[in-house]
Image (cartoon, rainbow, N blue to C red; front, side, top):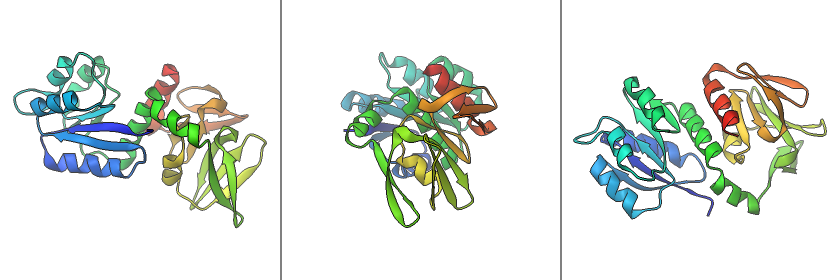
Length: 232
């Protein structure tokens, strides 16, 4: 429970290894199969319950897009391709995201964040068990309920966790590690900011307003931010 089942379909072994390695760095994902072509991928889809497919486009005999069209009820799909020419066609098929090789770990995690925003079920199951995290600050571990966290700010080697009552907790942790510990209502909007969407008052393409603060939306996160809020 609380784990997304992932299938990786790519004819390049190195690309499959990179995708699986990236997934191993993120909690809540299990690779339940992989395939080097569309025919083998179809067999894997028939064999397993799949939540998410990482799909290459240019493969032998049957392209990734034709494979996707062949599925009556496809799982969510993130395309990873060396070619940007198919992006519009991919989005027409309702893919979650379109990643261009070589893919950075940060861009990869952003795609997962978009997927989780559209498919919060597994994360919600986890939240039935835990709706808090412990934050180490001032030589203590503070039990902090997620619903009281408004946003998180990165400052050099430290994070400032802003709380609804106006207080803050300062902890030595990277924003990437913190991001992996947070449930689906938290959204990365900038290399230095994560916001709790439950506390957002307004937003545009440049800023998110939260608890009387205007937080910047960086260019690399802008598309995902707009899509998540439009979806919700």
